[in-house]
Image 1 (cartoon, rainbow, N blue to C red):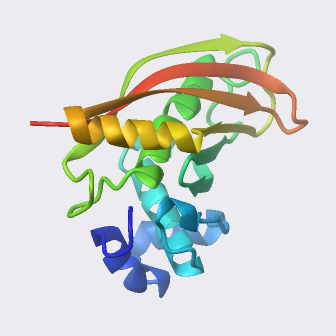
Image 2 (image 1 turned 180 degrees about the vertical axis):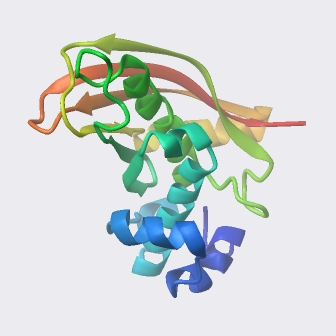
Length: 201
């Protein structure tokens, strides 16, 4: 995203609370400040940070199963995404977090990070591109109890390479590692996923 993109143009209305119904209620309980790096070409302002956050919440809400799982975006900025998975309704018959829920909260970070990092919006540099996952593996390390936090990041040099590849070939591929921790900060699982931002059609 960059100043002048369709996302930036929509910032004023959303930053002033022009969000409707369910989204407004969700934002009240889970919006937290996030930073925006000017070095990546984004406006380093609370308004743009808020708008980016709203887009992330909408992305989760657009996938009904993620919303049903209660996944909350806690931080999103270019090159970084983090989300939380609540215990309910994600507890299995042993009383620990269901393995499939752990996988889901980690896998979706690739999409969130792509939306926050690459200008996929209408009129943007990579308009018409979508984030896709090619493959993903998970390693379970210990049973998870309580709220689980999943986070993943992509270094600046990788962001630049993916963008260049996407513009040159119609797809940019990257590997993303996510770490999942419990309320005590213990690592409960880790994932490695191969993602693409790819032009469709």
